[in-house]
Each structure stands twice: as C-alpha cells, then as structure tokens.
Image (tube, rainbow, N blue to C red; front, side):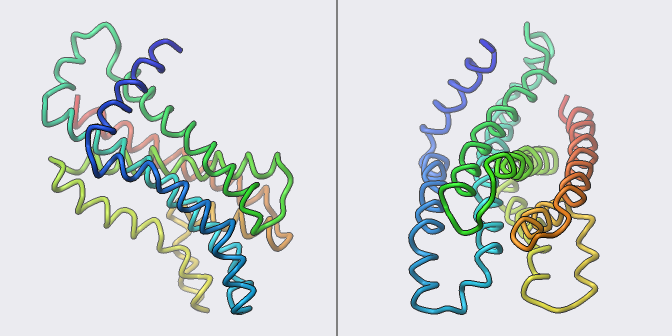
Length: 235
C-alpha cells in the first residue's frame, strides 16, 4: 500500500506539471455534467435522443477510463525517454511491480468515476452491484490503452498519434448501435465490444452475465499479451 501511495503521489505531481495532462483530469467532471444534465435536457427538447441514452452512457464510461489510460501511457513514455526503466533493473522495487501499481491506481480512479456516471448519471436504471461490476469492467480500458501506447510508441509525439488510432479502434464496436450491418458483430474481437454489450443487456434486459464474463475474458487475454510484450520490449 505504501508503494502504491508513493507511486501515485509522484504520478500526480508529474501530471499536474504538464498542462495537457492536468486538463484531462477534469474530463470526468465534464462527462458527468453531460450525462446528468445536458443529455436529459436534450432528450426533453428532442425526444430522438432518448433511445440512445445507454449508448451515450457507454461512450461516457469508456472515455472516462480512456483519459486515465492516456495519462498513464504518457507517464510511461516520459520515463522511457529518461531511461527510467533501465534504472528499475537495479531498483529495490521490481519493474513489473512498478508497472502494476501505476496501472492499479488508474484503474481504481476509473472505477470511482465510472460508478458515478452509472449511478448518479441516471440515464440507465440499475442496482448498485451491477453498476460496480460495469465500472470495474470499463475501468480496464485504462491499462489497456496505457500498455498499447507505452509498448508501441517510441516517444511522446508518436504516443499522441498512436493514442488517437487506438482510441478510435476501441470505439469501433459502438457503430453497431447506429448501423444495421451484421458484419459489425466482427468487432467482438475488440474487448470494448463486450463492455458495450454488457451495458446494453442491463438497459434491455438481455443476458448480462454472458456478455460480462466474455468481456472479462477478452480483457484478460489482451492485457496479459500486452503486459508480456511490454516487458520484453521495454525491460
């Protein structure tokens, strides 16, 4: 716990030193305001929005976690530029432990933010336990994006460009709610597909546990593969 607090404190200090990263910390508040106030208002004025409440909530939860993935990924890239990972080979803390603790901090904050979006937002009615499970699954997007960016980008400039591509890729499964094309089910290979289907099941009374379990499996496999690749490439 002491190591987690120490790493988190240092990460927040670095984040607040960078204007771009510091600004991203306020995005969850903006997302909550949109979900809680703007969307209901627009739905009253334009009823066409109402059928898409669950889709708007899906996107909001995803982007809230995405912001922390972006921050963690850029912290990794900054340390890559400064050869911090080389120093970790002889540091008292193992490199794998350091990476895990940093990702854990982002996941925990994402869980809190997503839980607020799901429970306070009010767009989709659900029990607290279900909201917590969904918040946990959506929060896994943060380490997913962080590891993708830190593994494949060589520096922060590349990281910014690649992050946009990765974020677009993870957003692709949401197209199935706007386009009636069976081929879009092929996006099931992307973990976020199962997060979207899990929330859809809650909103429509579908098989929540099936989609949720498959989602955890998809995230687990991709995160395991990324972690191994990241370890081999960086350390």
